[in-house]
Image 1 (cartoon, rainbow, N blue to C red):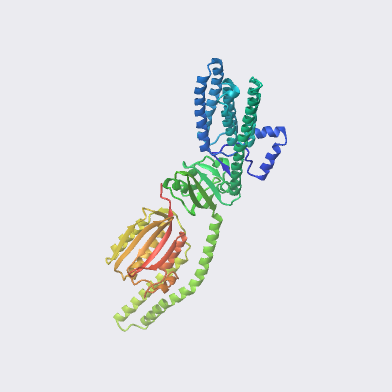
Image 2 (cartoon, one colour):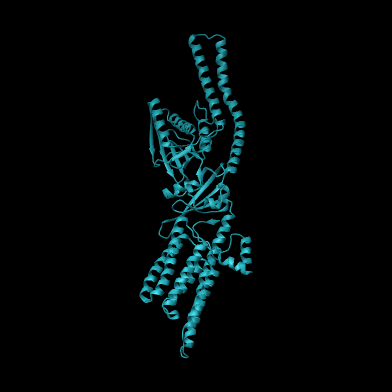
Length: 555
């Protein structure tokens, strides 16, 4: 896993056993030590690097002011001024680089720390040597090297500091009475230098190994992981994410998430929506366009990580490639449909037999010659009625057997509810349709023709259950990632023991019903990855509850 926004350098090692073995071999030769020295690789979060950089610049300015008051030699201050200026410019370059790319290079970090050492060494040298009040700053430089770069680099700067203080100690004149105190002081300083180097480098090493462990875990997971900062910029990706999206780690890092996870429909990236609306997604499915020009069905979940102050720190976007799973789903649906059609063929033959028998009897009676015009008209009416009923049976069967082809669009459920209000109240004076939208304008993604058929069938069922008179209530609500649509009526209701049967083809309690309305609705809802349930209403009547996945609001 690659982490943008991290300092490169240190003792953390690589991300594989081969890299760790190669790092071990570096210490077995002088060239290896030199390469190790100038190729550190610990991770250090960019926000802490920014704090360190600002603190460094502030300390340099403060130190320059203090030294100006203590050193009166213009030549000495001129030399110090040049070193301070170089360190200050390097510190500013460090901040600019960090702000622009979220990371700094090992060479820039090395240059900065060496300049910091030079500033402290020159300041100590010109302000009293071993007796200078600025000797403690060498400990700060060693701490900086150990934390930012690692154990080896911390010991390297501890050695430099020890040699420098040895040089200062040798230049200091001592008497027999001060000799022991003088070298004891030097020994304490040297021990402090190496202790600080060990402690800072040790914790750098521990943190680096923890990050390496995390990288190894994530890189060996089959699911993709993206780390996104509050500005919507990708700061990390594991190998699975790179493979699914068809990109390399270098291409993903620093890239806007909206250009990394790109919905094929042109809708807004769900991670961008999660950042803007401050909410998370769970198993949100959408088709994403990949870098190689193909498309993949992804199942995405987002988790917002907050800091101690409750502010957004980052978003973890985890996703899986569901393309193959969707293909298997389709095969299973096709298989189930084939079995259902075979079962329905027998049911269809049974349902067709009764209308055909009635039509045949009426035609035979007419063929023998009707006794009166009234009888002929009655027989003709029977034939027409049974023919219409036969047509309804065949149409319902075809609607159920047909494989729904979904043309997905962003739809507003309340628009369909209002259409039903105009349609049914216009055609049926005894029917009143009440629409209530408690969803806050939530939208779904689906085929407008099939969703309209869903609303039409359920409203038609409700009207017929009430005998063509009464109020149909359509209530739209949103809960989490689903949009609920309730179709309520005040009819006789459905007995509890019959609820499980209402979605079976040709099941009906109506005298002239076909029994295909709810099965067709069930297939439409299933094709849209939703659910449909029927329940009795308190006080009488029935309620059909449809739940469909909530889509992103169009931008």
